[in-house]
Image (cartoon, rainbow, N blue to C red; front, top):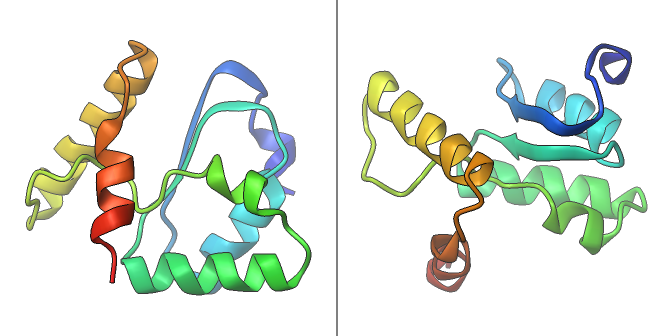
Length: 112
């Protein structure tokens, strides 16, 4: 399992970004209860919603899903792969440095 290869603890940051929704869901399912400093998943809001809905249908709690940062990256209007990478790296640095992430609440309010 992927969980066997991911160390636990405050120094572990995980960004899930595979080539398919189903694979992202499998990885998230394997790591959702693991104590990690950061657990995030790349994807559109519709992809994230679909994956979260499947996990909730299978009994994963809302509290567990609330720990997952998805979609990952700071909202900087990224379009290119390079800009998306910068937005993700910036979010990881912010979490590592203990910065509050107020844009998460804003993003939730803006979601349709």
